[in-house]
Image (cartoon, rainbow over all chains, first blue to last red; front, side, top):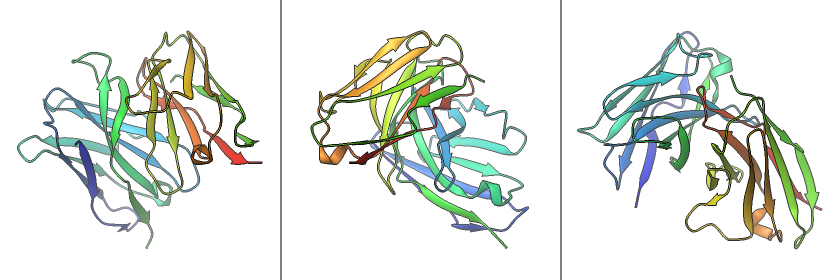
Length: 123
Length: 107
């Protein structure tokens, strides 16, 4: 079955880089878009951005200048980098698969999710 | 950005009750709307996509309707395992956006 699992540090210092990796199993990354979503403690969901299996990306304008998402289809992984971070970036970060409205669009709903990775930004 | 306004933000209901949540988009999103259930400490779980299509394996007591800007999500007979927070999400345009959530609590 399809599974996604986030991995990375649980604590990042202010002004440093938040780096997370999502490992996908049970499905090839080809023909899908792969997304990062975050949820601050006690708050709602925020879409961060996605990467296609070809490496094309789109980001939320609210984070665009700080975020990079990349994919390594040979390892069935995709990654998130966010720099520089502040306390406002403290959140649970989820990776998810986007089931797009078409095979060439990352606009879609999220049918598979990782379990989430809590990242705290603190000195 | 397309704003998604969900209401109510919370509700109290009893087992067996019919529960309806609404989601309004700030512009026409046709039927590009999904609904998710999230339990504490867990990732959201897809229930409905394309406004009214039930995801595989999701019980039929869950349903969705609407198009354009106004949508609703209904649980026909609330079960103990349905107490959770529910979110709508639009995928008509980027950035993809979510509603603020509706927490369904036990009365």
